[in-house]
Length: 333
Image (cartoon, rainbow, N blue to C red; front, side, top):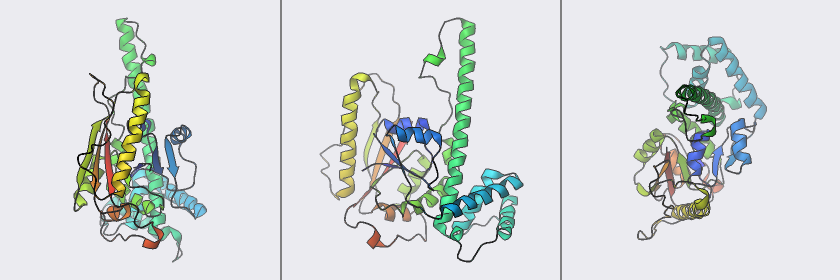
């Protein structure tokens, strides 16, 4: 079982580093078969990131739809907002902001784009994929800005150090980082992302039972929707060092094995604790992981419950009797 990071289709390096403190590999869904962003390719080549595309097909139509919305968004000059809001309006019911300028633009856009009655881009899954593609571009742009601001911040710090004449060189230090929230962009339309991402999950025949997010909003939203929840794990990441590398690797394997066991068993011996990380005395806390168990509910059922009107796929297409519980994890750093 590999933990699935959600509801995002982009993974920044700071978030990846926080996840890597607990897991040796993470799965991330992609909305299309197109080449993923370069930072994610690097993570995939390292073996840490498992990029999966459960929903495929109509790639040419997908590319055309993205270009159409890009062109119209550029014409109206509100690219990112129009993209996301337009596709939100397509597959979410009850959108009622017709008096706003933004939704008037979207209404004009819809009238202009000619569609066949059975066109794939009116399908909720197809629309969700396009929405998540725009969300990925949005996150990538914000990550680039974060990195640029970080580099600028470092140069300013180096300037002050040079003026003081203490001889330090920040380019040799890896611990210095600007106080910029690397996950702030991920909170934009985050519940809409969750609904779109759930359409993708419904197509994954090989999904495990462990899902991890970096969004407190998403975590709280899901937990609040469940009839029963039990917190089963909470810990701070161990401090990485060469001397502890082997111990940390063993702990990560044991932790994943323990969590996987929880997804397949309704009852676990409460006297048997989950894997405890190697202790680093005096170390400042870094990333932390909290995991909650939703008993008696497999992943598709769990995520469908978050949105009224959602229905599960044909039960014959999903292995029945394997995953009994769903685990939702929150990574914070």
